[in-house]
Length: 195
Image (spheres, rainbow, N blue to C red):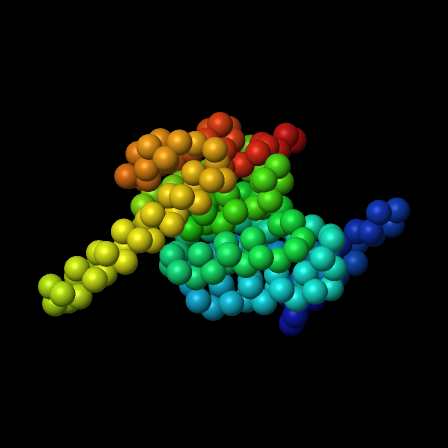
């Protein structure tokens, strides 16, 4: 493998040998990877890619491959909102793990175009906060904001999965891990890939 710019082998259909291509080639194929915890930097990069690629073509689907332990709530909601805003459908594919905000982004893919690999895992739960040496008034404000965020997340899961509010709320009370098949039954993905 060449040293320097990250490259991957790619074989064009009909050719015998693979050639080394830079990762940006994957973007041109409209393949985007979320392979880490979500923070503001990751969120801004994904949002930029969604907007840029949708400006190149607003009819070709984008493919978001997810293997993420989750991360910050607000940057995750920003990714979700952008996915709903851009014109092309975004197909979401869970490979490995889509936990917490990762599962929220997974469920945000175009309905009928959300997929999980057979051995993928999905986890949903309520948002969490860390209360460190805060004054009581700040704790109350943060708790109120956390309840608002939980309401937003719960409503989106209800809307996108078709599950009743009470069922989603109950599942979000704790860490609820699911296999790919269970995530399909829960409505988080539409299909489980077969090999």
